[in-house]
Amino acid sequence: MPLYQYVCRKCEKQFEIEETIGLHAQHRQHQCPRCGSSEVQQVISNVTVQTKRKA
Image (tube, rainbow, N blue to C red; front, side, top):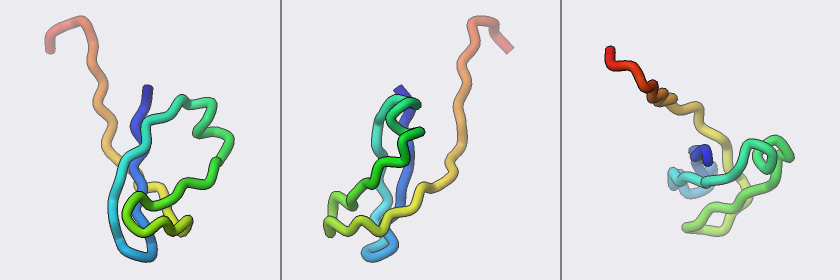
């Protein structure tokens, strides 16, 4: 299941939420775990891909 990274605009806490792609596509409102604010913004993060072949 993908991890999505967010940052709170109020207290600047960065946090991750694990949710399915389908739930994420519903644009649900998330809350900051530190201050409870709903003023959160998704952060674009790096992607890691694992293959069966060795590089």
